[in-house]
Image 1 (cartoon, rainbow, N blue to C red):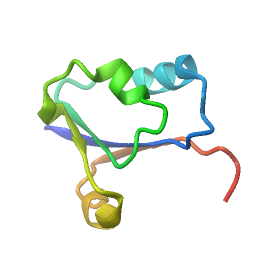
Image 2: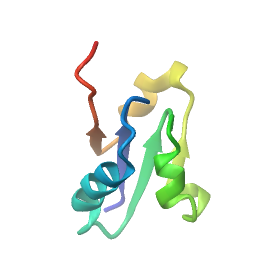
Image 3: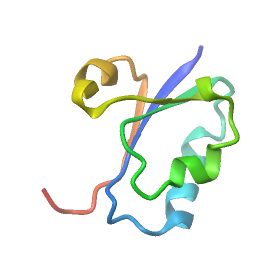
Image 4: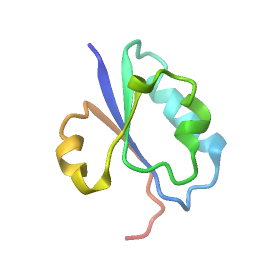
Length: 83
């Protein structure tokens, strides 16, 4: 099964190593997956997985995020404690 993993994090998250470890621990046993992102404020996804084929990273417009988020099979969301 191909998983579509939504990744969301705030621009306040500046620790790339923390981000990388958390995401890697979740996807390590997944063989077929793609990422869905609406924003990559610190370019973490691009920095780590930018070499993947374009179809592995689906960057979508935030204006339609609810529609696209319904397609996700998993979500990895980092929260900065605000909002």
